[in-house]
Image 1 (spheres, rainbow, N blue to C red):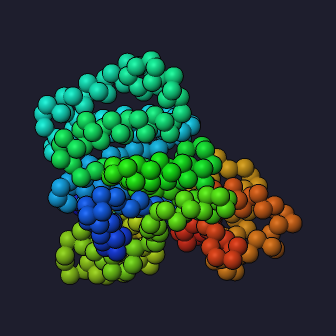
Image 2 (image 1 turned 180 degrees about the vertical axis):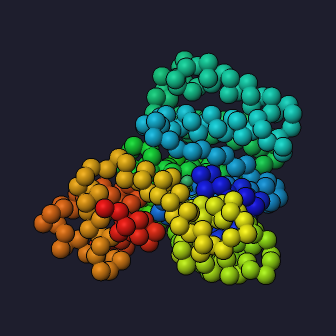
Length: 370
Ligand SMILES: Nc1ncnc2c1ncn2[C@@H]1O[C@H](COP(=O)(O)OP(=O)(O)OP(=O)(O)O)[C@@H](O)[C@H]1O
Ligand SMILES: [Mg+2]
């Protein structure tokens, strides 16, 4: 396998996460019996492997019989509101139907025309004007389109249902509690009416933390898969996939684990560099690799920050402990700084209001910088 740090892993190159995959597979099989598949939330910090896992889970949908249609949507920041979100989802559903191997050629063509008609109708995705006036909200649009898709395509194609994989749901600029709750209301109602549609979304690990009490049922609705860095065993598996099963691979894996503490992005980045510098001991080339990391990753982490943000990061890097309480710093840096840097993924909020820098390599970089 050739590591590609800037892209999610292909399902064929996917390493580890057995527990997460198993619980998703169990839910899929359960959904075949009950005709309602549980929904999932994949939560984790920056670069930990959320997108990769979503693609891997989508692959599971092909392994069950009858098959379930996976529909993938990367939620980008330009999808401002729920209506635009619903439109994008309907669009991707039509694409997935038109491309699916398990749908007959006739239905595929019909799905393509269905999408075409929707696009022609303009910004609001319905076929006729009367409906168009009615379907001005995202919820109504989604309900209408999914019901239609169920009867016109999913059932006739003998598919068992569909799972919507929504990557980076935090990008939807609606409050996270509201989105999670609206999506739950929609998909719960569809399931109650016998339509097996469900959701598997990914979001930053603090996605549910600011949720108001009214949205708590939404939190409960999703089975949560919280991603941690790779274990040493997963790191070894990764190293074997990249460097082959040779005599030195376990030494390389140990060295990689020590540097990355199993963080998938850094594993991919450093492994790619090692592959490009064959026949040299990892410790001999570390200096070069660290310089690349600095140029490609850490400098861009700092590029959009204010001087004071950077000053806080440096102060934290020089603290004695990895994990600190904000109290000694708040005279100089208000809580607002901690909150913003956490939102950007540069700080991680661990239990009991303590914070740490997102990775020890980032900490080292800040310590060495003047
Ligand atoms: N299970 C895995 N097997 C192999 N490689 C992985 C795995 N998980 C993550 N990676 C690698 O780690 C890097 C980051 O993964 P990915 O893009 O999936 O993370 P992410 O959590 O979606 O990141 P972001 O927060 O930037 O969206 C990629 O290079 C990917 O190839
Ligand atoms: Mg991602």
